[in-house]
Amino acid sequence: MQIEINEQEIPKDVSGRYLAIFVLKTFGIINNEKTGESDIKMLLAFVKYAKLEKPLSAEELSQMSGLKLAAAYKHINKFLDAEIIKKVDGTKYSLSESTLENTIKWHISKNVEKTLNNVSVFAAALDAEISKEF
Image (cartoon, rainbow, N blue to C red; front, side):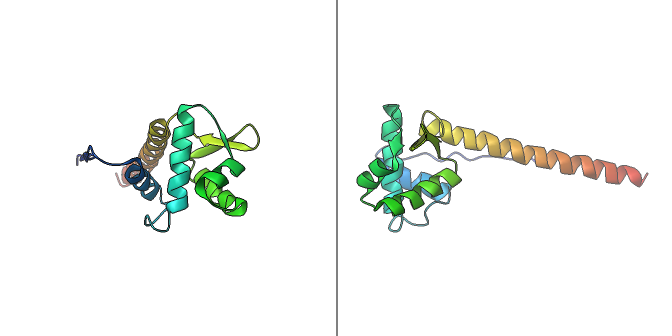
């Protein structure tokens, strides 16, 4: 059996907002764009400030997203749990990698490696089990 990955082309005229929605849905952070408006603003801020190599504080994210500080922390924790961002300089946050693309590539390689390792362990167990029958 061969695994085939079908590439999907991204329309050339999409906005950053559209791409942010796609990424956030992929990571399971939002279900739809209406309820994820604050997450969309936060992701766009992280991407923008990653280019400037400037980590953001919860207060700055609160101001950018229009959220109260406690709500901003709730959203920050979702991003931390998804490993999209990391904590730096004690009280600031930035993308996990230098760019969003690198962050996603890191996630893909981590998950593919984990999956392949799991398949390998099960394959070895199956080999051992079948060998017992002979």
